[in-house]
Amino acid sequence: MKEKKGQMDMTKGSPLRMIILFTIPIILGNIFQQLYNIGDAKVVSYYLDKNAFAAVGMTGVVSNMLIGLVNGFTQGFGILVANAFGAKDSRRLKRNIAGAAKLTAGITIVLLAVSLCFVKKVLVLLNTPPELMTPAVSYIRIIIIGLPFTALYNLSANVLRSIGDSKTPLYCLMASIVLNFGMDIVFVGIIHMGIEGAALATVASQLICSVSCFTYGVRHFKEYMPGKEDFSITGYEYKGLFVMGLSMGLMGCIVNIGTIILQSAINGLGPDIVAAHTAGRRLLDILMTFIYTFGFTMTTYTSQNYGAGKKKRIREGVRIANLIVTAISIFLIIFTYLFARNIVSWIASSDMPIITDNATMYNLVGVCFFPALGPLFVLRCTLQGIGRKIVPICSSIMELLIKIISAYLLVSKIGYLGIALTEPISWVVMTSMLTVGYFMAVKDFDNRL
Image: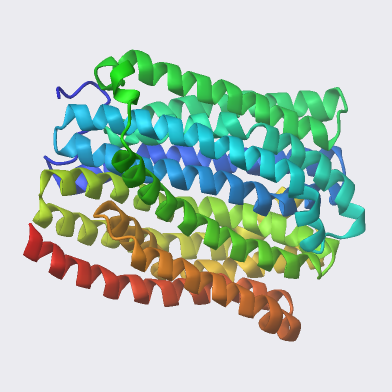
């Protein structure tokens, strides 16, 4: 397999250089995505009202669960594609891509049908305030209709990253975000389509992004694209892809179920706290981008090197990635303490103390635990990359349990502070589990390779 311009074979060269160069486009892409989310929220809060702003924020847990499940499956498929790429097995690579495409289509159809039927019932179970129900339902239904476009982009992006191209997904995402923000202003601010206009702008931009990314991959990497014969997938191959995809998708789904339960507790605290959490979460998400993207990189890095049988290189990469995310965490702590209040006030278009104080507190508490969050993503994605599924899933189940306990105990006793403490507590517990799991896997890994 000849390496093309813009493509990266992570089984050779300096691990530090490879990890940084591969991660930078992913970080930029996710920052642009988070900036869009902030811009989207800003447009809604500026042109509409506090309730519309809160409705967009609270439905995020539902859309994130669906998108996270699809992305988790395609990430899992990408692990096997990267493994075949590292092993230089062209036939297996093509068949994995073909199987991934068929499974992604089937999973998306099922999710689309189920979510459209039950989304309103889910919002009721989330204890959605009555004044937010109508705008929330209107917004989330349109977002769900765009799920096939999101699935196509995630599949295309994860396949491209698996074969070492992390730049193309960035370029497609950047273009769609600019278009999305422009359409937000037109649909919401000029045409006055309300919250539905914000949702339509999102779906339209997803369509453009997904088609662009898919088209580029098909044209630029023709030698990796499956032919007609590659789509004759055996049951054994389907099983391998599905199990790996399910492990990644289930992990994300478990985490998001916990987030939904937590959102129910937040909704019970009233619209002002929902608005505060929406603003606070927007900022925390962009700060977390600098951390969790190294997990995406380690999935590709580990999978390629695992396919090539390079165990020492995997261990060196994990050590380097953990050092990087720790250094970044220290910087983000300082940044947050200096600028969080001004940023969340701008996002929410509000100086109300109940909103700015709670949103700021949420970020200050969360960022102090980033030194535990960084290794969490690095170790979890590394274990997935070498085919270790159980410990990452168990750690996600532990996060779910902590969120459930928090929703029913901490929040009732200390209010929104309980929400702010929930995820940091889970990060510490999960990182401890993953550290033990990693060293056990490495010991076994050394014996087998």
